[in-house]
Image (cartoon, rainbow, N blue to C red; front, side):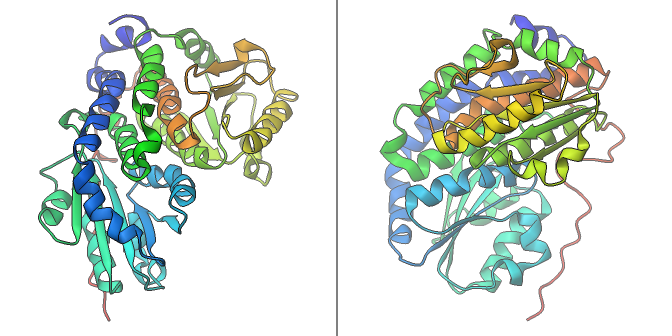
Length: 384
């Protein structure tokens, strides 16, 4: 293993995270095969549901898994021509009657790395309490998790298992996040996504294997930022949120990271900017949305120090190459698919920043104040 990941792999406490970031292109290819092999069974489960005029699709998960839904919601809404909402399990558990105030036929799509977080199973149980007609698609990386076991074999549920390697051992979700995102795109997109997994894998390999962005990542972190802001529009808004979480998790909270949309940033959150802030803007592949991303990049570069505003995207935008990280090969994919190789950049920023600060990214919270699988949640009975 060479380049940035090769160097980090030799760092104490980074081995699992390095391996799981690096393995993602291979995991994406494996998932492409899994969904293809499951196509007939998936269609048999989903097509009768998607034929219902008033079906509501709810994408749910906690933490990083909830950002899968945020990335996918608008893309799937357009593709399916129906209502698709991203609602975290933490919101469902805290306010089930509010989240399920209406009672249309519902497909609850649950994303979970382990399936053992307290909210994962409880959210599905609350959906069944609140709704008269609910089906479950469970996309998980752990066949032995409570969520998978509870829904396996149920007539109203379908469990789609990810490759075992995607059940990340490191603290932060990396290959599990991108794997579940791709699995849902392929599941609902069908033939529209033929060949996309291989294209994304090629882009990912140029980052993880060939190290095309190693120099850029090193230059960004050489600025020793105390704050990192991620901005993204549309589907990339969820990507920005996941990217900020990766920096917070992997560095043990030693770098403050936040996220917003390109347009929303001006409405107050822009106050986070300081001399030691860097801003990363994900540039949409959608020609309309892209214009707003380029506007905020130009605005920020006019007032911030050179090199402190980075644009990550697939297409050229007329600004100097040294200030842009190109994802060559992903120029015409939907933003929800673009998110897969783009988030690898954020994973590498967080990983490298952690090692530079002496934090062990495989376990950045050795005293246990933050856990890989959430603990401490007391489930309460919903009273009718």
